[in-house]
Image 1: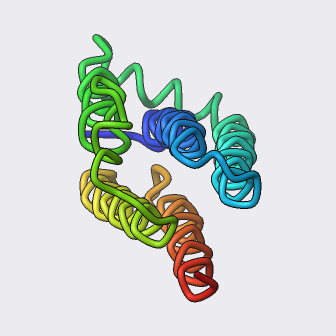
Image 2: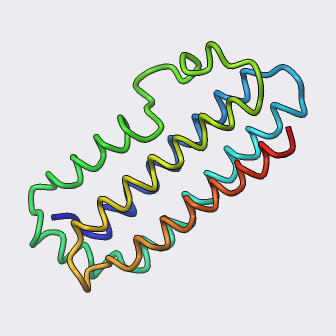
Length: 160
């Protein structure tokens, strides 16, 4: 069973991973205009990380007390961390490998959309594991943020 504190912690990690992903994507393109798009996306991920951190702090004390009761050894948090680092913005491999055959900004934006969709699926799956009254409703805020990322990326594709 997961709690909202752990989910926000993982959301923060996913956003950090996303920032790294977009920073590496920026390195794919020498032109400043293209590089700037991905650096802006990396900055947005950093802002989302801060937002998730603030949300987490709002519920931290109550949730941590509950967390110790539900998961005293921290196994659920370790599991969530493993998922965040391997399924969403996998940082165990060099992200430029995914970019090897990509020649345009549009193609790279499509890869980013797929990754953002994976994060939405991750959060929706986690939502089902959180008991009512223990922060389940907060997951909707995270999903909304990730859906916003998809919309921004989609809008960018239309400009290329």
